[in-house]
Length: 77
Image (tube, rainbow, N blue to C red):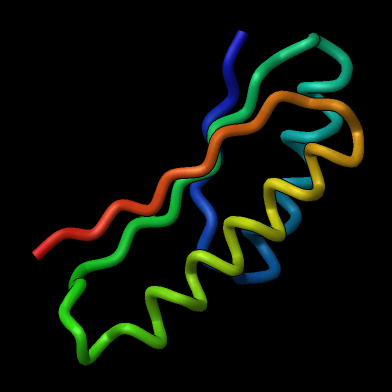
């Protein structure tokens, strides 16, 4: 089983990560965490780095509980 979570750093997204963590632990699932951005030019480098840090933090939540987790940063535009 796989669980997909969209993550943008909001409180709702953090709650979704916690819910996904509980379900993944119960069902032995793998989790994919995705952040999607509209632009990816050099002018948005700070926003890209912030998104990368957020994904690293999200992955650490799952690693602490020995849950397989993949993160993806999608940049459109």
